Image (tube, rainbow, N blue to C red):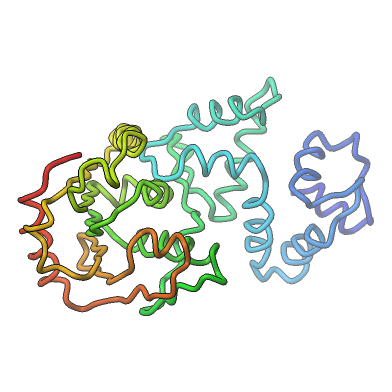
Length: 292
């Protein structure tokens, strides 16, 4: 980043002499040839303090940079992503206006440096590493009507803690939860999603819900994730009261139903140690279920 060093030492740079100036200005490092506050932080960390904190600043800038957001939205959760797919996303979303591929290499190098992707130049393979749904969840999460955004964020983070598979028992499961699953469905972590709810005919599983499920199942299948939403006769599950989310890694949460989470009804999502018992019960119910 020689232009960054020059700007820090001399106070500014001649914009016409830096071919990538528009990129760095869009990122928030420069403003009219001068370093922004964030840009100065990167400069001082790299060339004066050498404390490694520039990666944190760059990560923050890059995660709000529209081309990065586009890559996350299109490529998060996919395995075996290559450079051609990245280029296609940037072209599709209107963020590519170059003849040479050199800017793409620099962009990927920067994303890799900031820890947002892993980029293997030899194999040309890329993996998106950063998702907003990767923070560890407290053992007890309180659902509150005053925190509608946080409620949805926490359920996504609960789902993101599952590995190998997700099994979800909710007698009144709703299609809104498919969006939560889509946000965290990483094909390298999850291979199967099983959803189990009551068979109430068209009372809660309407045609629009079935269409949403069909589209969701198709897209997950393209990621390599098997999805089945099954329903069960209420008489065969009348001995079950709680709702569960469990992963194939021994992870289990008791939680309210989808509607309660979505509407912010006061309740809790609690980590449980009774995984084996809950898993055995789920598997027994699952045998009685029929796909919608």
